[in-house]
Amino acid sequence: MVKDSRKLIVIFGPTSSGKTDLSLRLAKYTYGKYHIESEMVSADSRQLYKGMDVGTSKVSEDVRRKHPHHMIDIFLPTQEYSSQEFAHEASKIIADIWARGKMPMLVGGTGTYVMGLVGDRYLAASKTDRLPYDTLMLVPYFEREWLYRKVERTVEKMFQDGLYEEIKGLVRQYGAVPKQVANTHGYREFVEYAARGNKDIAQLTRADLAKIKSKIKADTKKYAMHQAGWFGKMEGYEVVKDFEQAKRLVDEFMDNGRSNKRSSFKG
Image 1: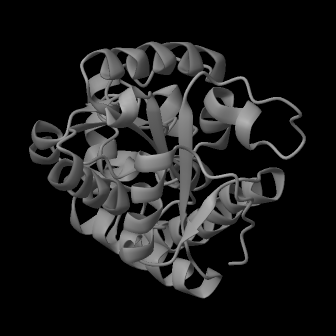
Image 2 (image 1 turned 180 degrees about the vertical axis):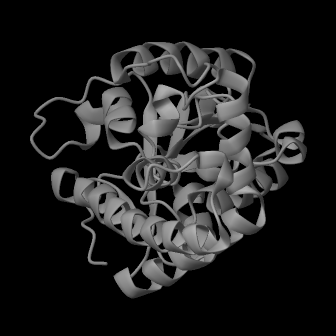
């Protein structure tokens, strides 16, 4: 590790804002320039659950073979997991990544998960800075209308990739809709629609699916804005408008440690 310091890159932001792409590009960049391999720690409260793949936009198995991802596919969707449990487990994983001489990247949009781990440093109300390592928090820049269009495309792709088949498979596997499926946007809309119309979730028509798709798009946009609301509680993060800027910020961080700059989001 550069200057023998424990460093953590955090990539945070709303759904569909480009967090995963940025993390993978930075992993390639830091390996090429600093010869440090990166491992990702997912801070997504739904990617924890097995079988919920398409609807949570998990990275592919091929990507995971190239870049190890932690905190994915840990639990059954009938189980529960708290932000406190996440912070405890993620801290151990990050320490292990450092111990093996690699770079941890915390990537996700679940604010309680991210802040539960690094909140002392980034919550605006905090007066302390207790984390025993350097952190750099990067937020992909977005404008609302751009993000809304990206959400539309993402939801379309989920349906093309088999989102409906995935939820039917989960119902067959567990004999009912698992709790975490019913509580997750992108899946919840199927459950609520079927319940309102007293329909079998496994027998929905093309017209039914079109209505559900429209509702998922609307709900996901609202959820993205809810995630963006975290920026009003935070300070100290860096808004990344392009990859050249991301590389400059990482170079400064790797060479000198965490910047004292206080950024705010103007998306």
